[in-house]
Image (tube, rainbow, N blue to C red):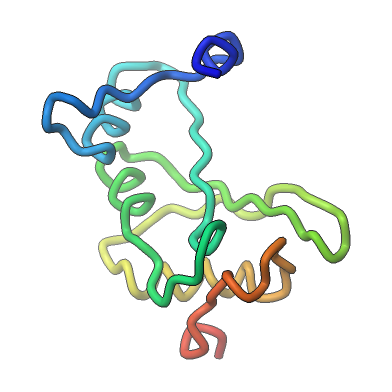
Length: 120
């Protein structure tokens, strides 16, 4: 599997040196002229009640925008939406990001949690 991922342009993350994945990804962005990564949303394996901040921290520290992508399983379509530039206010940013996903059907809807307070 590792060989196949490398052939497709995958870059391994060395987690053995005590460095966080977030720090490693920021370093990758800072060491390359071009880099795109995909981070899957919360709820792909199990229900979570709060989204993690890693994607936001990476984007802020690497000074890169977040391109909101989606796969709508109900409509059988996928694509990319808006380009989002994170601010210093994670909670405010999360509300905006979650609004984007409000009408998108997840593969496992019971596992995909959009905070109700963010849907106003």
